[in-house]
Length: 206
Image 1 (cartoon, rainbow, N blue to C red):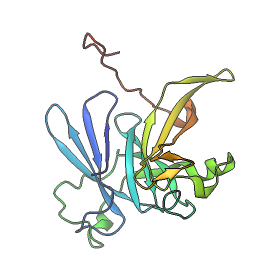
Image 2 (image 1 turned 90 degrees about the horizontal axis):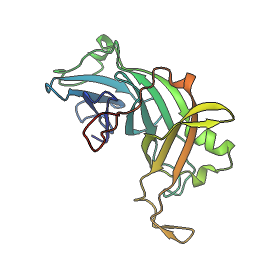
Image 3 (image 1 turned 90 degrees about the vertical axis):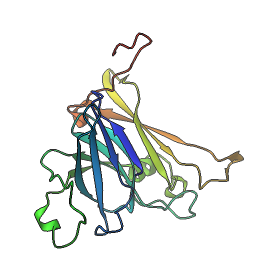
């Protein structure tokens, strides 16, 4: 289980497999939700689009998430990066597959998959901003929201994406470098966004 998130209201822990389980059809991954108070669980099926694995999941609200879908190409692999994308997903309406032992071609026809739409093509946007595909890290694996910012009078959400550095021995004289890529996101593109609650010193939610 590579990806973990908690819903902004703090009620649900969400985990996602990096790749399909051994008994499941290739490209079909499982998402599990756990009610923190009761331990009640649900499972849902997610299908990879063009990546080979999922590295992170980030909660937008209690039912929508951003999923980091990628391949293994890019800086550290020695090949140009191809697939580094964020997909916006919605668990609402997906079939609860808890108790389904294996996702096979036989039973998949009766399962409603998690809805997903492409949200951000990271390679394309970085290319357009002067970062060549060979310099996009192969393992972009961390995704988080940062503070909101006002840019040219417009409020924007910030989205941070960071690489896992275990492929990189040295880049430009820096050993095992991490790179953070920061994107500004229009509020209209994240309709329903709920910021994570922060616990202060008095254990009160902010």
